[in-house]
Length: 383
Image 1 (cartoon, rainbow, N blue to C red):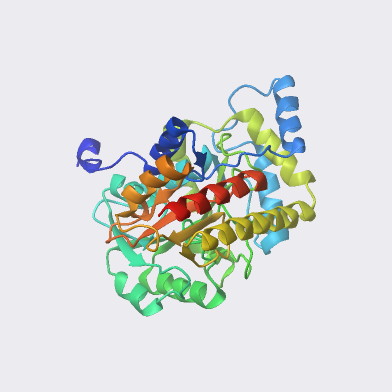
Image 2 (image 1 turned 90 degrees about the horizontal axis):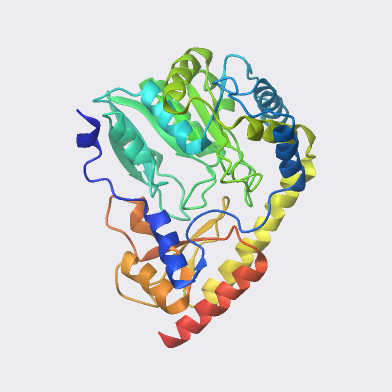
């Protein structure tokens, strides 16, 4: 099937469309997940130093040696996971390119990829671009994973399952029993676990456990992450892939022809940050996001939304049924125009019928979140 046929029916990113709508109406943008506060000085200064040192040409296609070594050390120190920096790590242009490279390398036309729903909007299209079929499994907000239902989604054609933890948009952090159940299904069906762990350091309840650390899973897990969320540098596009060497060899070929390589001086800066920032940086960052979460969730509840506070990541799904009866896209549009706050309709993360919910991002300064809260309260008073 030609690429044009595979992409027929794809919609423009709703998230980025809501950002344009927010700009048009001068609304507070709680739609797209990028911070409005500065990156750490140590990261910025390291990037400047690398540019001044003329680290401005192509890095090694699969990533600068220093960054791969820093990531290998981090995985060992944080999770006890041994990773060979020379044969098992690839640096990409963001986690988005990482996911595309992995699926294009490992999934063939006619195979199936299990995807939890709601999902980050790229997963389904990435599977379709491979000629594969995404098989959606519901992931209800605030409820445990139904492992029996998940098991029924696996078949002889299942090639992989995509696991995003902490999860966007639900905020779920998968627990030990859920991860063990997913690992068991991967073993039984000879399937890969392809994980998106970009929010690994933003956890409020429980703890982040890479599924690759479970018994027997290192050989069948591809771990995707990156620097965007951890260091507030979403525009730098530094993603990472960790995979067994034989899978890495295939992934690197796809990555090479997609983008050649990630920005060289920015790789040096991220490596420097990984090597020099203390553990307190990560715990302080999570604590700051917890304060932002609690601030926004409190405002939403007072405005009449219903919600379950997220356990991780920096998004919250909120039920607006007490404030409007229209569909989620119409409500999100009205919220921009009448409240001056931009959010994302949950239907952009789903194929099934969408509940009356929208997603708010709280990766913003507390003063901006407080202002958004006041606007939402005023909006609720007019409903």
